Every structure is written in structure tokens, then in C-alpha cells.
Length: 296
Image: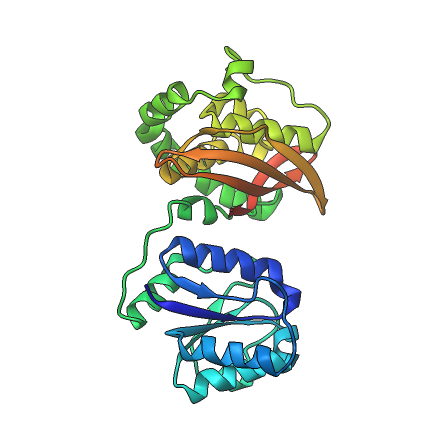
């Protein structure tokens, strides 16, 4: 296994830890400060040793890390030891000291794309495990009602006609094979419903129906512009990601700016359990897109 050192600002701890966990799932050994930086000569020696033993250094670039004396030292140590450096731009702009190195742009707050991990692995002459959650991570519809939504919606609807034909049998088998609390408590509830006025509840019902493979029920909670396409696309992504069933109740809360964030415990076909956090874009209480998906 190759060793990766992650340089980051404490301001970005949550993202850095999520990034480190993702790297470890893919087979890398990761050195990252998980307890909080302890200033002093002893701590600097630990950092120096960690970088010396690292095969590569990933720098999470933000305005805070650019101003951090510790991050600057870590970059200088990596350059001194001629380590491979992989910058990841989370906020702000590229560091001048790393301007000549290709960087990954994650200013949407998502983890890097699959191509980034493949690039790291190839540069280190190693292999990388595939991510069973990649399909869910890539779900980024961000569709809004209006002209742009109409154009994208028409494209999705046109594509959905072909998708529905090809996936109808697969979705049917998927729906019948899932055995979760939602389906047990709502057996026979395969007909459209009248959504409630609570956006968080509608998002929760949409997510549960989608994970259950119930396209008709999920479509009941979709905004008019995307009925017949959004639910189909979401369920197809769940199938491709290998979702088996929900393991916990779907909990959703409003996040402001017509956004609702939901958390769901999920079991995948490979036996892995995880927590899926999805942010849905809402309009008049209805689901109009998947803005972000995180798996932990």
C-alpha cells in the first residue's frame, strides 16, 4: 500500500477527514492529524517523519490553508524530499507555490472524481480499489424550474423514454427484491399520493420510495417539470451503485435556500453498510433535483 500525507487547515477538518476515509477505502495508507494540531518542535518532527515516509502529499487548498504556516512548512518539506504533490482546490484559488501542478477542482464540496484517484494511483505505480459508492457520489442534477429546467427537463424526458424501456424489467426486479422497513410499512402503496405541504417530509418520502425502487410513488413527489424523468434517473443510479435496501428511517431537515438534506442508512449488495446523505433541491415543496450526495 502507498502512503499518503494530507495537508489541510483545521477549518476544513470535516472535508479532510471525509477525504482521508475515502482514500483508505480505496487501499491507501493515510497520515492525517485526526486529533488536532499540537504546535511545537516535537509535533514538527512527527510531521517531518510522516512526510519523509509518504509516497505522495495531497494539499487541500483553501484561503485558510494558504495562510497557514504549518501547511506552508508541509509543502516545503514535500518539495525538499521531492515527493509527488497533488493539490485539491476546495475554496479560493490555486497556491502560487503549486501553480505549475495540475489540481483537482472540488469547489462544489464533493470528493474528487474517480479520475483523480486513478491519476494518483498511476503516478505512484500502484492500483486503486474501485469505489462502490461512485454512482451515488456523481448524482448532481441541480435542476431548477424555469427555462433552464425546461431545456434540461426535455432532454431528460427524451432520454428517459429509452431508459425506461431498458430499465423497466431491472427496476421491477429491484423493487420486488428489496425488503426494508419502508416497504413493510407501506405494502401495496404503489399508487401516486398527494404530497404534504412539508418539503422535508416530501423529500423523505421521495428518497424512501426511490431506495425502494418504487418509481410511481417516487414520481409523486417530483416537481411537474421533471415528472417521468428525475425519479427514473435517481433509481437507476441506486441500482448501478448496488443499493440493496434501507437499514434506517429516512430523516430529513430543511437546509435553507429551498434545500432539504436527508440521511439514510443503506445496505449495499456487497454487504457494506453506509450512511447516505443527500441534499435535494425543492420547489413549492416538491423535489426538483439532487444537489449533492455523500456516503460515509
